[in-house]
Image (tube, rainbow, N blue to C red; front, side, top):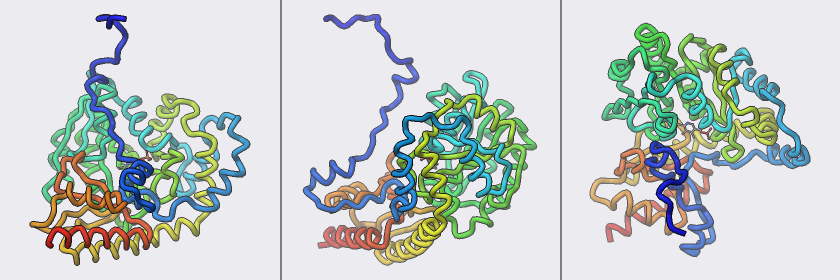
Length: 379
Ligand SMILES: *Cc1c(COP(=O)(O)O)cnc(C)c1O
């Protein structure tokens, strides 16, 4: 049949979006290079895997999947509120923090009227969801040292700015401003534009060496214009279950609940999270493994001549020694050895790499492989 000139198609702003290109899967790489073992240090997942207690709980609740989850996830929200010692009415759970980022935009901002502000580079979901929601997006370049240019960010804000996104500790750099800097910025923002919500994405905050000294949430500071995002994907080991949450001013939380699809958090994700919260030992072990592994990797990357950035999350951003192989060559060579890390081209940082903190064994294999990449080049 001849192609009709008039037929249904996506809106122009969706059509012009670059398709999401996922990395090669573990299976693809295993087959392509004939490898028996693949080590994935590309997505900042939990180095210890999933808690055995969570796995057991999921098995126990497998028979419940025919039921709808309870609307509003009250048990889960109560457990999360307890973690932060806050009012459960401030919590909204979502299908990953990704869903909450989208929900915040749909709930807070109107296309053609409002704008959102974020950094460049930043977590890719903020600008992409803004585009999908047809919102004007204003971006402020990071400083050369990857710190936030607070003054310039504030200059981008006007009375039509509804959301301003900051990630602390930042991905991919690891940069984490101090509590005082964040508090000061929130109050300046409030003075300039009281209707702008500062969204602080704390996906990696629990890995920070000094959570109390860096997180407004950990200090229980309830500011009228600040929202926090946290996730079960990293330190809780539930990336595949898709569960994130926001801690918000109550009025905004109510709006998000109205706009959220009724059952976006599924019944197994909810059970998994409740079990993860109970398994305190697994979480302590996770945090310990990340702190130790991070220190070990930082030292070893440095001793290989790499430039490393201060790491506050469960990942390290680094550059290869000058006059060694290119980042792309390094990434490809590691891949052939069965080790997947993250090149940062999509963050417009083609000379930088990011590696997640893995288990002791994975970290050691990565450093061994990197060492051999660098020495092969010198032969
Ligand atoms: C990993 C990550 C998240 C978590 O996203 P989920 O949708 O909860 O898996 C959020 N923000 C940043 C900056 C991240 O790197």
